[in-house]
Amino acid sequence: MTQQDRPILLVAACALLDSDGRILLAQRPEGKSLAGLWEFPGGKVEKGETPEETVVRELQEEIGIVTKVACLAPLTFASHTYDNFHLLMPLYVCRRYEGIARGCEGQAIKWVKPMDLRSYPMPPADEPLIPFLQDLL
Image (cartoon, rainbow, N blue to C red):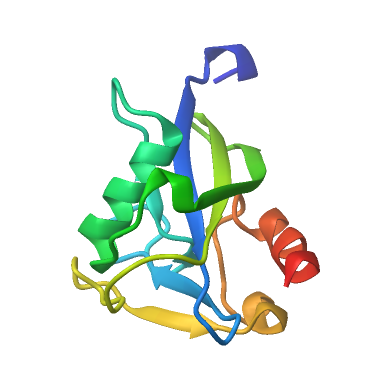
């Protein structure tokens, strides 16, 4: 498949921060592509949705966290070519939310200090985001 044949997949992700400055990571569950790798929570942007609305929806569905679009701050983005598609993923930072994070879809979650992020194997698109978070925090 040539670069021109690959569809662009728009996904939005969030670096959710706790009061100790740690970032929430979620482990991709068995049965999904890249299973076992750690990622920032988020998901595919659905038709009629903005990336910010996607983050708000996905945080609630995946980890039981409630937040608002106004609580999201854009930080950077990932642009990565996989075998069958090209991923474009804006990354937002969120410090204001309600609820206790839990793996609502059976996935493991972990609060991680910024300097420890490289200790967790991540999808290739997520890895370049780490220095931006480390610089921010």
